[in-house]
Image (cartoon, rainbow, N blue to C red; front, side, top):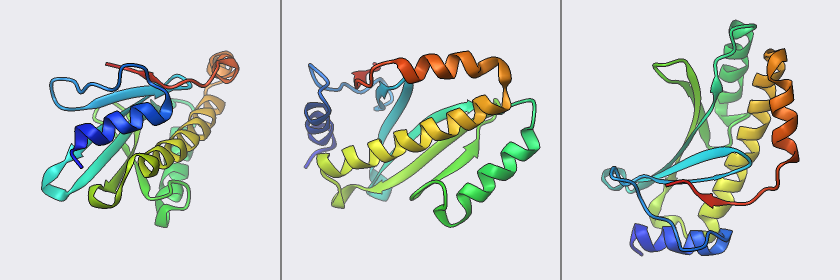
Length: 151
C-alpha cells in the first residue's frame, strides 16, 4: 500500500473529512486535544516517523523534569516504543518509528491514540512544573476530543 493511501485510510478511520494532505516536505499533520502530531514516511528505513512537541522545557524544576524524561525513556517505560528528546530550541519532543510494512490504518490509529495519551500525561506533568500554566491545562481537558487536519 502506498503511504498516501495509508494516510487517507487513517483519515477516514479517525473522521477527518476530506482526507489528509502532506505539506511541502511530505509531512502529514493532524491534531486532537490541542496536540499537533506529525507523521512522515521514511522510505530508506521502511518506517513511519510519528512525532510531536510535548512542551517547552520547564524553567522551574528543569533538572528534575529532565531526570523524569530519562527515566521514562529507559527501556520504553513511559514511552511505549517511543522516546523523548530535546530540540535545539528547548522543546521536549516525543517520537516513535513504526515499521511501514507491518502497519495498516488500524495499527497506525492505535499508535496515534497511545501517542496522544503519553503526550497528554507529559503535558500535564510539565504544567505541574509551571504553576502559571495550570489554567491552560484545565482548559485543554474541557475541550472535545476530535481529530482535525493541521495542514
